Length: 168
Image 1 (cartoon, rainbow, N blue to C red):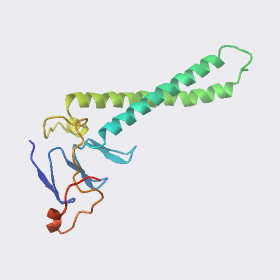
Image 2: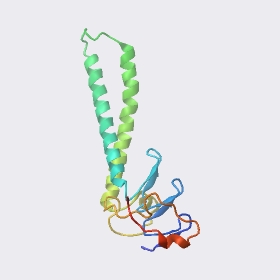
Image 3: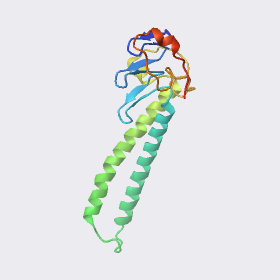
Image 4: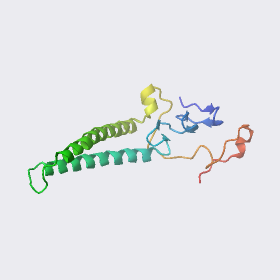
């Protein structure tokens, strides 16, 4: 538990809970998962942004479903000023039903991640059952970057000492 490992691809010493992502081709501290929806890895330095993204999409889903429901209820009240437009009603249902299911799915996903935060685990640790370190995981302090800002890792491995770990 808590061992540092050498990453052959990035040519760095990886701290505990750091994993190399084959999609992004870099090591991610406190790696949670690679998210195809934001096309980025979710880990130590951006998990709070990912949580905010999930919360905002869940709120958007709630607002859209409530607004469509209110609109359909207002139109189906029998008021003659709106007329009886069945096509608009069907389109509202075609949009509203998938929006409700997707909103519910995102809300469940958000609750799953909140549970992970409370348990101090990452998605990878929860799915594999392997816990590589203890302590705060995802909403802990951001900490330093593993490589200098926009720096290239030397391929020879000798000049690694010349790189200093500084942010922007």
